[in-house]
Amino acid sequence: MRLKIKARTWLAWIAIVLLTVLPLWLAGGAAFGGADDLAREAIGTIAPGYAPWFSPVFEPASGEIASLLFALQAALGAGVIGYWLGLSVGRERARAAAGKSDAG
Image (tube, rainbow, N blue to C red; front, side, top):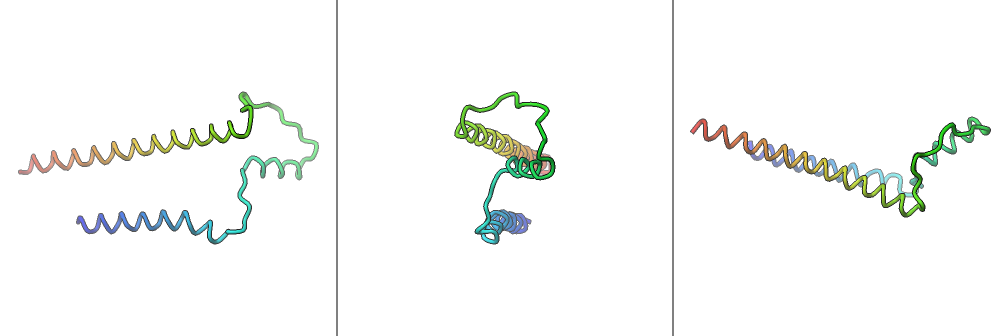
């Protein structure tokens, strides 16, 4: 059982590495950009006279601040996911320990 869990963990890590590296390797010369710029270009092509019907509530003062806020958002999201994973593992271990003490 423990060997199966280790094998599954290693397979998950290999899949994560492959999903991270393969797109960069396969599309090595591709220009990576934001979806906002692509959408703006597509809208400009489809409807050249289009005028936005609203403006953003908050617009960062510079691109660096926008990048900082984006990185902060990603870090907070990673923290929440890490907390949830840690909590889930802790609960599972506590449940397994309670099951062993009840059985033994």
